[in-house]
Image (cartoon, rainbow, N blue to C red; front, side, top):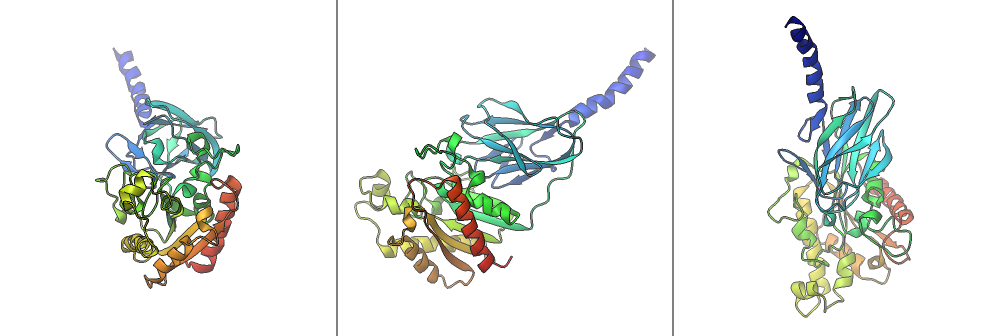
Length: 357
């Protein structure tokens, strides 16, 4: 009997250690980036660029995940380097993010590359390898940026080198969009309220940015984001590419739904854009706002869309709201990886010239 008690005594610490090896999704050691709904048993990752970050001391970490459609992809970033890409299944499973690291302190980030058209991913928690232990949550970065955009900002088709301009999950990568690159350059927190095909007045589907910009769950009109949870220093809006196409398609169902039989005139377009910017300004009274356009064909020199943006912003009479055109990249389809880098360099220069952090 005494021997059994001794064995139990030594087993208790081991059992406790095993229990501590699982870090649940609502643990305070986890830092979430982006509009993430942290619910009782899981965190819902929906938007492009939403991320889960931890610091740990040890050699390896796994994540417990389930994907809605089995289409999303995630970058695994260890010590600020992308080490692998994972593609969660539609069943709940454990995925090895990193293993066999040199013992010591490390950082880990799980970054959602794909947009909400691919569905949600549920993150249930981390499990830690061997003697690995969790450290204090990563600090919130001093600078904060938020982007509102369409497929360009999503990184749509950025990894399709065939010229087919495919935007399905294997070819979309928001991590190498101009927006994410710019945020990393400035070491800023990064939020992206983006959806391929979205417009200000009309989209390729029944939702426009003025209806989506304030959502936590973008697919639920009743799910509202608490803007007090994140206050950016800088907001970048890059829209109108889809409007530019759809206002010329009276046969499209969304044209009919939004405009009936007559395309909107310049005044209506300007007012709609101004109202969106005004709505965002009311949420962030002190932020600098850049109203950008490009780098696809809506930004051609002979196109009216950048002029609409300039007129809309001029009517707001707000010295902290700027306009900027990336110009037309001069090639078909969506921006390639190299073109996204060029956009980031352009935007970084503009921010350096205009914005005081």
